[in-house]
Length: 208
Ligand code: AMP
Image (cartoon, rainbow, N blue to C red; front, side, top):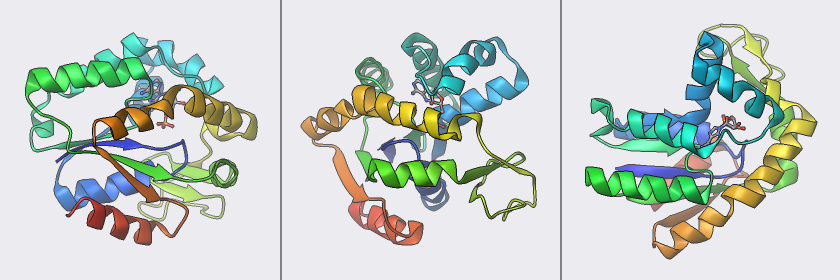
């Protein structure tokens, strides 16, 4: 199964993707995770991406399209993949279509997790992430619930940056909803509920 996951930052895409990956044994391609790893390692890509990420702006299309195109050549994506955080612009969506048609691996669904912006602001400003395994928690988690690693607040989860990320989402990414609706691939799920219930709906909607 080849899936694109759409939704505002903080809608719960990472949480749903992790469960889908486990259930379907497909590759999880999170551009945000790939960029954070590059920043941590201090690679040229990380150095280029950091200022955009800290401001809550999008990393340039050519950089991110190259990154995903390369990742899609990896053998583990042949059994299926879930793209989490990509595409985020029309140019990225068009480039993805072209690459998938070249690889003869069409998308099965574009899954939209919908959550109201004010709910997102509350969620993201209280979100914490594990330094070791990337697991997502809240401000009340002093250590990672999965591996006991140290929890931290992402640089871009402060309120001003969150609001900018939501503006960027509305302007650049939300138009993709109509794009995928037009391709008859859109599946919309209400993400403002317990993540377990959301996942039940996701599995039903994708007939998993
Ligand atoms: P995320 O973890 O998906 O919220 O991504 C964190 C940050 O990485 C975003 O705010 C952007 O700066 C950058 N980023 C991730 N994916 C993309 C993408 N597809 N296009 C451009 N920038 C991206």
